[in-house]
Amino acid sequence: MTVPFVDLQAQYRAIKAEVDEAVRRVLDSSAFILGREVEAFERAFAEYVGARECVGVSNGTAAIQLALQACGVGAGDDVLVPANTFFATAEAVSTAGATPVFVDCDPVTYNIDASKIEAAVTPRTRAVIPVHLYGQPADLGAVFEVAERHGLIVIEDAAQAHGARYKGERVGARGRAGCFSFYPGKNLGAYGEGGAVVTNDAEVARRLRMLRDHGSEQKYRHEIIGYNFRLEGIQGAVLNVKLKYLDGWNAARRAHAARYRELLAPLESAGALTLPRESAGAEHVYHLFVVQTDARDALQRYLSSAGVQTGIHYPVPVHLQPAYAPLEHREGDFPQAESQSRRVLSLPMFAELTGHQIKYVADAVADFHAESSAAAG
Ligand SMILES: Cc1ncc(COP(=O)(O)O)c(C=O)c1O
Image (tube, rainbow, N blue to C red; front, side, top):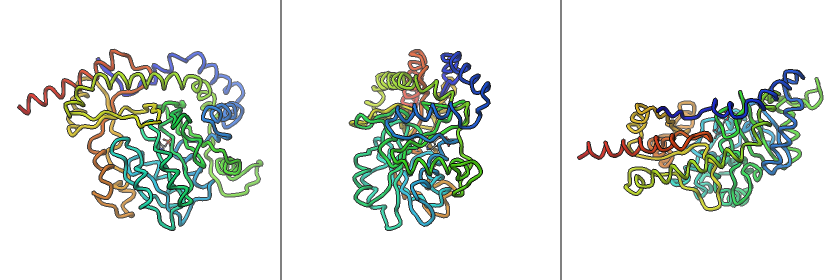
């Protein structure tokens, strides 16, 4: 048997008729950039998340950059970001003209360790970006508490957490802005690039709309220097079809996670594997199902030879990336993020995963540990 890491074909097959019809509508109307389908999606997604406004943009990285700029963050400002995240979180801070300042991660949730935020705040600090990593909401209560004490803007990076809830509310809507990626493999994925920013602040939304479209509100009148970061019509149409299914897909992911947990529990009890934990009050949507083990690389090779595709999110923490060499970080600066980068392994996770596939993966993980314990004598 082979088990892919994600299976976009399986999802497309299930909703093909609706998606094809939506794409045909865009082709018939030639509304290829922004337009009615994008506006309809923006309304539906704002309502889904529980925010007043949603602004569709070209991808999740652009969403974070524009959110910062629309909130007035830029040159001379520091922005706190977790050391374990996809590179784009920090990259967007840099392309907005500000400087990322890293904060270590919580050993259990993988998210920003809110107890370490305060020590990183200086007079230059303007904002903090909690990332809801792997689909698990960050500890927003603690993050907002420090942010309010120091007057920091909170921008949520919800690129991996569409529909996840923190204390009953969807992530993304509480910060000054919430940023989403619709990269195809995400819980809500487009059929190409896509992203969005949600906000309850009408002025931030107005600036976002200008920034994504050459600094313009009115054709050929440019108020500010902006970008071409618009969402395409076809992506709006596809996303609008898929949004209806998101809660069902997230529920399926949660059920798969529960099954993995049940099957892998004996390995955790034996100390061979660390399984993901859900924090109190947080509803994880399992964009990724991430386990930890000291034998990560050997386990990945073993699973690959058994036909199971896995991923590593992420093998190099952001502060040690070559692009951030000018910040002069070294190994040891953020020990949790560094340890996670050596130990994490993401098992196959997508809504259409079957019970057979989950059992096959869990059995292969158990076989690996049985064989390595036997070899160790
Ligand atoms: C946590 C996080 N932030 C930002 C991004 C950037 O999104 P995009 O790839 O759509 O630019 C991603 C997506 O990969 C992500 O996982």
